[in-house]
Length: 133
Image (cartoon, rainbow, N blue to C red; front, side):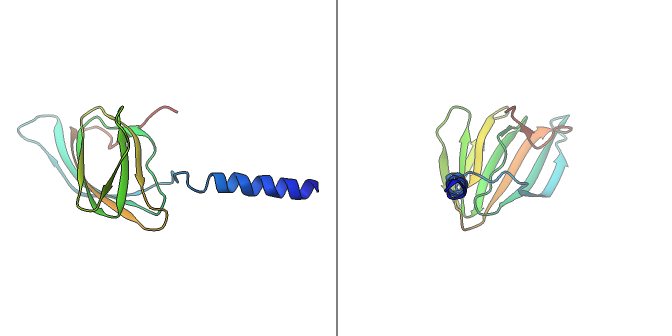
């Protein structure tokens, strides 16, 4: 009886987390990076972000401004105090510099998703900084 209870609790725990985001490393590919000669100390960065089914980026912030375009699939995004919005392929969204990006995830548990992101940022800045947990 005790073994059955332990097995049941383990299965319940696993199913409770079946739809939690997976925070393993998404695939970032830098397509273009260039210093902005008219804005000293700044650069433009163009990259793609590939998400596996159910995958998410850790909650983070950007020092730069970002514009994201969904190339395939659906991406759920929640920035600052706004509500989470799910964007479909062909839609885009904007993040002001210094935004806190609490959610950026693949909305599907079965299909991949892909973003094209263009950022204007400090030339020495990281693409993202994880938020304290």
